[in-house]
Image (cartoon, rainbow, N blue to C red):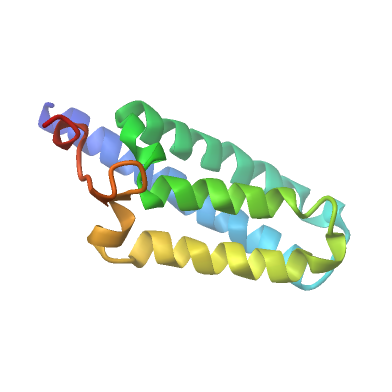
Length: 131
């Protein structure tokens, strides 16, 4: 990969993450302070859009991401998010659980983030699957 392409991808992904975190902050404020959803609807849309792009980016880059704990826990977070609909009275608690899982995934040790639940060992790249 050329250096300009590397920097373009790196800065694009960083910008997407920043927008995703901004969206999460807006949603968190709305959920935790029990505001009317119309007040923070734009933050929901930003979070969903950037999260979908980031997740798609990871899967396209390396499908093994889905077997690694960082991918699995992202899917768990989506499952917790889906619980907002049948359990609106627990949205605050669900949001906090999602936030704590996000910190674990983002700032946890490499051995945890890259642990594959399929291979039962740390897999850092798709090249490690063979053999």
